Length: 358
Ligand SMILES: [Fe+2]
Image (tube, rainbow, N blue to C red; front, side, top):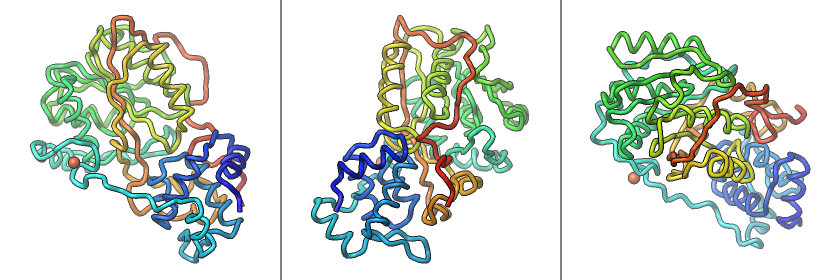
């Protein structure tokens, strides 16, 4: 039987994603707790291709079996293997009320209802811009979080990319003084502007590609920014760097989600160095699994068909990201210049499967 070190090494060779024995252990523990592929990803919080390849390897080693419903199950040999490694099924003790965010929404229930009513005709998520929007609970929790940290009430808010419609939730809360959305998708720009007009919300949305320079008037203009970037290192750096350059002075805040599903800890480390050394901001919060995404229609079309157990419809909102909050210091500096052409959506950790179809 392979030891965890050998498995980790083999997965690294296959995927190009640096994989530790701890990563493998987490995937085994998650697989022992659920038989559904997308839930194994949620529970293990490891990059998509790594999880897929570990499960396939376990199958090849005769430790797990995939039944006709594409459920992944350890057989008796697999159970013995887990026991020999002292790996137990993953435990979950997350608070069911706030889903682990630590935000009590009972005072904002009207906002949850109002947001759902108003956005019922929102544009559908499309793959062109890597869209996938968050749940209403998540959007309103973002509003509550920003308000609680003193970053929303009476402040100027910048939303960079807004398929989540954070601008509308913020407008409905009545808290920000001004909200500006820069967004690449015309459908969303029009939808947000139409909604703002209809409900008299202080929002202005404009078309913008975050590779371009920001409009001059927005540099050093806002108190707070929020964005939900694609997860190549370049995209993380660029979107957050853009956000920081729009902030007025020290003590301003930025919010953004980063997953462990499309970003390994190696990538987190590189990005955190960019935040602290290049942009010179302080990371004040990382709230695990804060952002829950509504399942998007195009998932199974874009993941490819490398293994049968991947081609199953998700049962729960499996895709999640941690919420980062950063705060600017007196020497903080973002990105103001044009950006060189770079890959923004796909790297070896992305959900879009780059291996061969079988
Ligand atoms: Fe809670």
